[in-house]
Image (cartoon, rainbow, N blue to C red; front, side):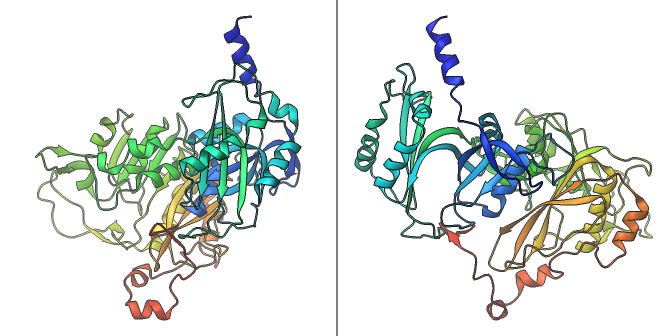
Length: 492
């Protein structure tokens, strides 16, 4: 066997030991799994666990409660906001799959040691199974050691001193800063200066990088690079997170009933989905707009510019009166959208008017106000009837910071709650990304009974417009959102 073959075989076989993980929260059983330290980004804190769950279970069961071998272990100090969570996943390949698509993970580590002091850390490494470390100390395995400071900066001379502490490992391979076989990472958690960071205990982690995330899609598809934008175009990072929650994959059929300039469908198309969109404003779809260079642009340009598969179709349609045949069911793998809830743009529905249409080509159908409660019921009906079994509905719900997350916001016999993630926007209002999964075939009688009951879906607040634009004095009297934290000037 050639040396290159030996090297490839050896490196690919160096996997962490698979052991019995903790009891699964959803089914109560114990699964064979691997324990990793998940080093999170410090942003969109309420979305982190839901994203991992959704990616890990991609292509799995139709039941949102069935285990997919993912369990979370509370971090040191017990803070939910900590970026250092232990995650149990079925295999190392599972960790690589999650990290490859995740936007909120920095890396997964196989931890060789951790401690509150350097002495504790080194003792912890010495106690780690020696065979697990020695297998990486072969002369042909290249390596590098990175030093990360969380909550503090680590100067270059300090980094060199820290790296030298690990000479006892006996790494024999060449140092390679670009694409080494082995990346070891030292993380020093020391948020003494706070700067909006959560209070976590001082701790040092050391281990092998198993997988790192790739956030390059955020730059590639950034809004400043788009030709066709509107005032409510979905932020690139959030559009991709919504597609992760919707478990969008190659060959899926994804629908956005409030398509606008197509930001969500662009993200879905990146993952290989066939896309379809509708909007009540025919001008957005049919006319587009003229840019600064005098060129007319439209939604289709956003797909052509990225060399993405164009939507199957874009149509003028009213979400209050879906355009689908009455006997048409189970057609979409995911419905992902940002319904209008009256902050920057209010909802509209079609209404009949008595005036005569003089020109069909330039005619704009008449509309009337569309309350968010109406929109919500229509959206649930659309999902219950037109999602495939196991398909997901992902949409934003307006909210107020501090509203109890456990408050029941959905009740539908065909749809089960998967995730409810809050994104603070200002100290006055926030929005929640709701993820529902279709768990039963559509039944019109059961749906009608549920929607007419007291348990039907209602938004957390009925007057989001008043909440957003209330006077400063009234906002202070109501308490605002004093529990929210800012990091580098932004709410997280």
